[in-house]
Structure formats: structure tokens, C-alpha cells
Length: 380
Image 1 (cartoon, rainbow, N blue to C red):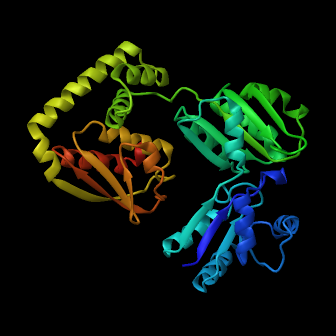
Image 2 (cartoon, helix red, strand yellow):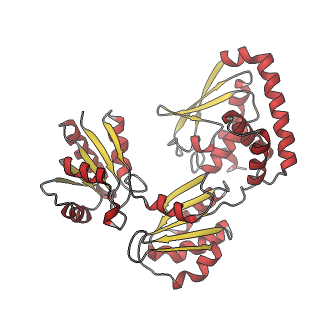
Image 3 (cartoon, rainbow, N blue to C red):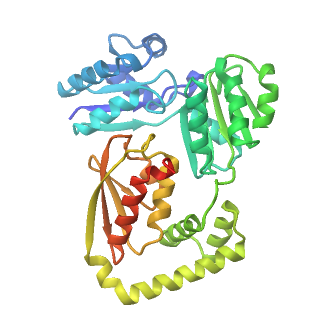
């Protein structure tokens, strides 16, 4: 079976091209490239010619997908490359990978340079959990709305930005997120490489003194989660217990640091949850494995299942003794995890199936149905 190779290429220094990437580019008869000009230079550097090149840009991604699928169906391996770095990270390559995978063709990563990974490695900031925003919207309104949604999680953020929009973005970061720690990484691995450790306020003050050219990656440190509630505290503790990777004291210390609750409050609630789970397993363990219910819910709020909506779902299901799964287009998501929910493509106007299993499955479905009907608070 023919293979789509997702090939990471240098973000600046050509010596960062891995021997395996060079070997794949040499062997693959077809190369799908975001920039034909830059790819021709790279192939010329490797002494390669006679390759069939497929233009894979945002404006022609549908045609690119069709041509890649045609080549694979004909038994030809295809190497997918972006302008620079790892394909699929905020570029048209993601559409190609998705279409190829859906049709059952083999997809293989050829790991290597990534501006995102490089910037994170020199940031020194907490990197998990992390929200990657790609390129921010060009217009101020949508840009601020996206920053507000991501910032509400309290997690670290990473994003790409064009040089000519850096000033506007710097002001919006300070206005929406406050004065968080920030690292600017520009022209990584190139001659004019620049890594600046500052804050949102510092970036807004000195943006005019920075070089107004070159590819930019910003990493913003964690903030305070917006309105950390008791249901959210309970969800964090239950998630930690389910993972089983930390002692109770370590789990309480970590959760307290990420919320507005004291360590003693967190530890006492943790002990109460452990006791509840013990009693529940003794009384209704068999029942929890048996009964399963499902219900179809319509997504009618304006932004679909975005970060805040996902957080409200997790808060809701944490109140009930059951497991809940969201299903959309064959993709399943754990309703107790914001990150899992965000993997679903559920915009306004779509619908999804909710499946609940356990003694309080019906009550959980009723509460979720009410949450969806209330538009996640938009109508209040």
C-alpha cells in the first residue's frame, strides 16, 4: 500500500534536515508542498529532480487532496511538506492528512524541526496543559474572542503570528489575558534568531523596538483559571485519582496550585471523594457496569463546543455518578475532559449523541439536555 509521509523540513538551518527526511524525499516520486518555490530550493539542495510536485495551499486544498489521493491510489508514495517545519500544524497539510487517513491509506510521520516545539523548548514556561492557537484571526474582534476563550482555561498558550500584526496582537494579549509571562521566538535556527523572555506588558511596550520581520512564535505562561468552581475542583481531583499517577498529597498540592482553593481545602475534598467512590463501588458496582442510556442533543449556541462550553459540560457531568461519552461523526470524547471534548468538530447547527452509563445516567442526560437548551449560559 502506498504511504503518505508527513515530512518535517528545516525552519531555517538546512543542517536540521534529518537523514531520514532526505531519504524519504529522495525515494518518494510525488511531493505535495505548501510552497512550490521553497520546496524546489530544498530539493535542489539535495540534488533531486524529476519529482512531481503538487501545490498544497489553503486556496486549493481540495484539489490538492484529490491529486494526493489519486497518486496514492496509483501506488505512488507521497511526501507532504509545509513551507517550513512540521506539516499539519496550522497549515493546509492537515486537510490532506485527514482525507488520506479516512480512506484507509497509511500515514507515516517523519519527525523533525517544528517552530512550536523549538519555541516551547526555550521558553522555560509550564507547558502542560497547553492550548495551541495556530495563527490568530486577523480581525480584532474574533482575535480577542479566541484569546478570551483560551485564556479562561488558565493554561499556557502558544501561537504563531505574522510580523506586521505583532503590535496589535501584543496589545490584545495584555488587554485580554493580563500581564502573563511571555516568550517571543523569532527566526529560530536562522542567522537573526531572537528569543525574548518578557511579559505581555513588556512585549506591548517594546514591540516597536523588535525586528518587524521573520516568522514569530509566542508562548504565554499560565494564568488563573476563570472562576474556578467547586464542580471544576471535583473534576480535577477525580481525573487525578482516575489516572493514579500521584499520591493523594501530591495531587492535592498540584490542584491547589492550579486553582483558588487552599491545599487543605483540596485535600479534605479529595478524601471525601475517595470515601464516596469506595461506598459507590461497594453498593452499586454491578449496576454501574450494566445500564446505559443515550440521547441526541443539538448544538445551537453561537460558537459550538468551544473551550467554555466544554468546561461547562465537564462541570455538569462531575455532579453525577456515571460515565458520559460524547459521539460526533464516529469520534468519541470523554465528557469529563475539556481537551477530549475539543477534539470534536461540533459547530453551531450540528448535533451529537450523548451516552451515559451508571446509576445516575438519566439525571446526567437531563442536566446536559438543559445545559444545551440554555445555550451554555449565552441566553441568560
